[in-house]
Length: 362
Image (cartoon, rainbow, N blue to C red; front, side, top):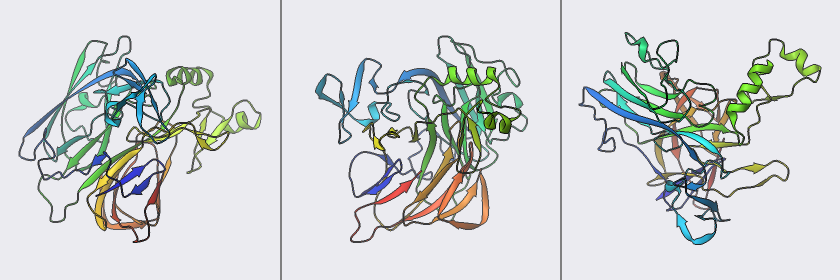
C-alpha cells in the first residue's frame, strides 16, 4: 500500500490513515446510488476552531506530526478528529464540522435535494452550486437577495434541481468572506451509466489560507475601494496600496495568503526563516499499489489566487475542465488553476525501485 502526501505534497510508501480512493460504481457511495431517482443531502453551517478537539481542548502537533492535547502529551488524536487547517489556531466556518465540507457524489439526470441549515448565531447565508445549470430551478442558484431570501440564523433552505451535466463542480457560500473562511465543498456528477473505462478517483480541494479574520479584512478593503480599485496602476505607482501577484499575473490588493490547504490540511511556512512554523499533518491519498492510474478531480476553492499544481516526475493527462470533457487528453507537466476552476486529470502513479518518494507541488 502506498500513500500520497499532499501540501507541496509527497508520494510515500506509508501505511498511515489517509483519504481512500472513491469508486462511484461500488458501494463506496452509501448515500446516493445510480439507481436512485432522487438523492438527498443535508449541510449544516457552523463555526469552529482549528487545532481544538470538540471546541474544548487545545491541540498541538509534535515535530513528527502527531496531534496531542496541549498540556497532556499522552492524550493523542487522529487527524480525522481535528480540523487542523495549517496548524494555526483560528476561527473557521464549516459545513458538517469538516474543512472543506463533505464531497457530494451524485449521478447525471438525478433530482438533487440539498437542505442547507444556518446554524450561525448572527450571520446570514446562501449557498451556490458552482457550474451547475439551474434549468427551470433559478430559485436554487444560491445567490442571497437575488434568487432567494438569505437564510437567516436558525433557518434552513431547500435546494432542488436536476444534475444535468456530469463533471466536477463545487458548492460554496455566497456571502462576503464566508468562502475564504472555509464554507466550500465538492459536488461531483458521475455519468448515469457505467462507462467502459472506469477509474478509482480522488477529489482534491485547494484553498489559499489566511490567519486573520477575513471578514474584517474584506469589509475594510471594500469600503476603502482597494478590493476592486478602478485605477489599480495609479494606486500602486503612487504607493497608496500594495499588491500581490499570482502565477497567472493576476493581482490581489493587500490580500495576504499565509499558506495553501489541500483538502483542509497544510503547514504554515514562516517566510522570515523559510522553515515550517507548524508540523500539522498533511493530506494523504492512499493508493493500493504502484503503477496504478487514478483520476484526480482538482478544484480551486480559494478566495484570492490562482494556483499551480504538478507532480514530480509525473505527467498529467488532462481530460476535462470545468465539467466539460476533452475530445482528447492534453498532456501537461503542470496546471494553473484559477479561482473556481476545476480540472480532471489522470495520473499513472509510479515509483522507481531506488526511490522512496516523489513530490506533488501546489
